[in-house]
Amino acid sequence: MDVAGRAPRLRERFEAAGCDALLVTRLANIRYLTGFTGSAARLLVRPDELVFVTDGRYRDQAAEQLAEAGVEARIEVSITEQQQILTAAAAGIDRLGLEANDVTWAAQRRYATEGFPDAELVPTEGLIEGLRLVKDDGEVARIAAAARIADEALASVRHRLGDGPTEKEFGLELDFAMLRLGADDLSFETIVGSGPNGAKPHARPTDRRIGEGDLVVLDFGALLDGYHSDMSRTVMVGEPSPTQARMLEVVLASQAAGVDAVVAGVGGVEVDRVCRDVIAEAGWGDSFIHGTGHGVGLDIHEEPRVSTTSTATLAVGHVVTVEPGVYLPEHGGVRIEDTLVVTATGNVRLTNAPKEPSLT
Image 1 (tube, one colour):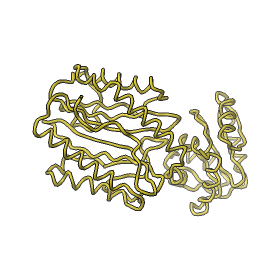
Image 2 (tube, one colour; image 1 turned 90 degrees about the vertical axis):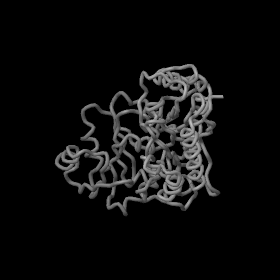
Image 3 (cartoon, rainbow, N blue to C red; image 1 turned 30 degrees about the vertical axis):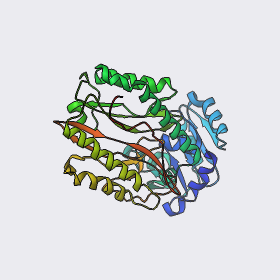
Image 4 (cartoon, rainbow, N blue to C red; image 1 turned 120 degrees about the vertical axis):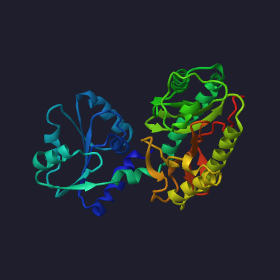
């Protein structure tokens, strides 16, 4: 990944944002710009240098990780004088940008009265996130590697759904499989929703025992080197009822149509519409009760969105999910999700676990 090339590209966006420098406080954005993975830091991006401020816990880690990423920065380490260091470093800056979606009202007031009293504080939105939209080859490789871990993990434990585990038990087995296969962590709390619980899109695993006649919605992902994967599969335990079979058929067709629609130049709202039309034609439009997808990267949910309200236009390098679903409490739920990277010729699927719903 060309981490060192990101700050210069960020500076090119300052004029349009109405600022001369930017105080970066969101840790995911600090990681994006520097490679730093710790839990405490602030980064001042000046026109001529980067000033990285952290505490003593990360003295050595910060130096090592920024050097490894090829990022040149002035690294300042302090427990009690971090704000004083930043105040001095911001001297001469007329307009200082703040990340409006990360800075609290209380912090803004402190910055205005004590931290940077000589600068005009400018709220900014999406300056770094706009850069993060387009993933470079290294980022795509990390997401793909995390997705492969999730694929292999499901393959190793899928058969256990036929042994009558509880949702919690199966979720723990799937989580451990991802960690055993090399994941640094889970992308999010694994969803295991069986029977009526599967009709709750974000059901948390319970003590309900999975049994014959259950549709089981699985939504999970692996975290690797800071990057997330995201995938949903629905497994049928036993033979499906006619309604369940139709649900599986319709959602699979909807998801396939959505995947085909993911190409550069298409709006996120159009991908959503394609998926939604298939489900509506089957008579279940009111049972598709969430957006169709979202971006994936350093955050599990990031831009661009794929929904009825999306204003995004897909471009080469965007990584998005396509995850339509149908939820009928009396029959269960079905959701199928892939993570895709947009390419010059269409898209490439990064999640490749089979979508066949049967256990065998």
